[in-house]
Amino acid sequence: MITVVGIGPGKKSLMLSGTQEIVDKAEIVIGSERQLNIFSVAPAKKVIFTRLAVLKKIICENFEKPIVLLASGDPLLYGIGNWVLANFDPKMVTIIPGISSIQYLFHQVGLSMNDCYLTSSHGRVPDFDFLLLHKTIGMVTDEEIGPVEIAREVKQRHQHRTIYVGEMLSYPEERISRFTEDSVENRKYKMNVVIITNEG
Image (cartoon, rainbow, N blue to C red; front, side):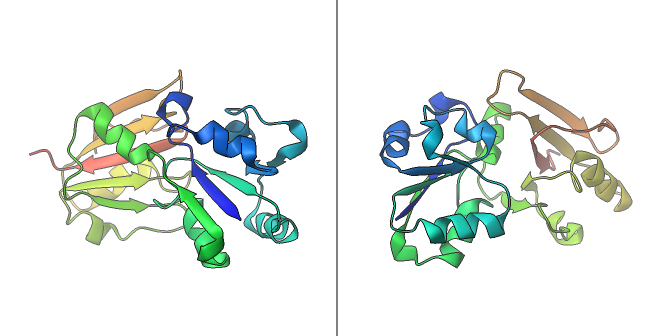
């Protein structure tokens, strides 16, 4: 049995009640070093996640054991839960939801999520012609396409948008910035998500 546990943006108080108990019952707990450090896990049970091919091998070799796979945010919102369901029998998989970083950012800036379009730029090139037809977009970003590139795409289409950038959300070093396409700072953004909205 594989249990994919959504751990939310990262702050322990934002996880569902009972998350630690689920982790305690597992014989193997898989996650990044950052994720594993949130929980009290015996060193012998910890497996640091690296690549998907390695992850699949670890799960297949230990399938008879109770396995917990930690997932940042919500596992089924551009998360690892989708990969698990595609690669293993869904009857053997339990998904525990979590607060997504996109959801958290919407609440932090006081914007409604009604009718927003949710997407990700992880490992993909978004269709900005399509995206910018929407009034509000929530996007999980990566190092290739983040706030700077989004602002450039907006300007290339001679449009105007407000761009909220949330970095290290729920951590002590959390940083939330509000830009326009002309004011986005040309710098690296740490663990960020973006809201693109036409507030006019």
